Structure formats: structure tokens, C-alpha cells
Amino acid sequence: MENSEKAVLVVDDEKNIRELIKFNLKSRGYKTVEAADGQEALDIAKNDNPLLIILDIMLPKIDGLKVCRILKEDPRTRKIPIIMLTALDDEVDKIVGLELGADDYITKPFSPRELVARVGAVMRRVEEQDSDSLPVNNPDLIIDDLKYEAVLYGKKLDLTLKEFELLKLLASNPFNVFSRQQLLEQVWGYDYMGDTRTVDVHVCNLRKKIEEADTGSKYSIDTIRGIGYRFSVKE
Image (cartoon, rainbow, N blue to C red; front, side):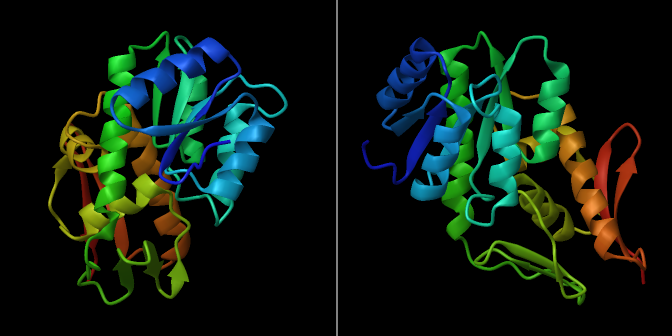
């Protein structure tokens, strides 16, 4: 197996799909490694720490949703971005995948150009992780880019990659209202091709985690009807 450092892990039980994705990613300069079933995907992810995973849902041995859940629960792999591959009409699988921590999804049959664009958008976000630590002027909330951690009232929040980036953006601009499209552009990348439901799912999950840690309800993510979301702090 080739070195998977800074590689994209492509997981699909259909060889022709893996070859199609590999060919198009290689044409854009990306390294790839492959897995044909869920167990192999877990082994590669845990041993080699790929930069990003393209993960089909219908897999032998362990299905893609369970693979996603296991990876997002493991501290060694939880920060690896995941793009799910779903059947065209599997709306439930899309939502479940996002709730489990997947960063994006793309439906089959897919345009190779669209998939490469989405990979590129995620890669750019990953490359920006090396920015300086960002202080947030809320005494009980610490957001640290270098450690990629958010701590509320001394409790580390168990956030996915996109949940962390959403919190960082919203909490750094308290009381500012962001539209769903603005959040898509700033968190997922300007060429992200998903829809605004992706934002809603991630905000819902982030809100629950904040509420669990903030029993005094000092911090909240408010829904501004017809517009989007804002981060609020009570005095």
C-alpha cells in the first residue's frame, strides 16, 4: 500500500467507482489510498491518518454510517473530514451522516468535477488550520485554533471539524447575524455545492452541545427567522 500521508482515502466496494475517483483526484495532484469495505477503511484511517475520507454508505462488513460514527468517536480520527457518498434518494442517510459528524455528502451518480471541487474546498479548510490561536472575548468560553479545541466552563466540547469552525465564526462575532449562505461560504468554502440544510443540521448539533455544557444558558445560538443564526451572550 502506498504512503497515505496527506492522502485522500477512497472507500467504496465498487472498483470502478474507486478508480473513477482516484483518476480525477490524481489529475488534480491528490494522492489516494483505497478501501473496499468498512473494516479496511477503519484500519487505514486509524493506522495512517488520511487527510480526508470519501466514504460510501453501502459497504460490506461495516456500513459507511457506522464507520463514520466510529471514526468521529475516536480521538485519533475524529478530526478527519468525511465526505459521504449516498444514493440519490436516500435523504435519511444524508441527514444521519451529517448528524454523525460527516462534513459533506455527494449523491450517486455524481459529477467527478463536482466531487473534486468539494474535496478542494475541504482541503483548503484543512490547510487553514495552521492559523494563529484565536481568542474569543467571552471569559467562560475558550476557543483555541492551535489545539483545535473549544472549552466552555472548563468542559471540553466534543465537536466535529465543521461544528468547531461554526462556533469559532459565530462566537468571534457575537450578536452578528449570519445567513445560511454566508455560513456555507465561510465555513464550507466559497465553491461548496451543498444546500443550506447542511448548515441547519450542524447548527442544531452544535446548539445541543453548548446547551449541555452551559446549564446557566448564558451562551446560545439564536435562530433569526427568515435570515439565519447569531451567537448571543447574556450579561
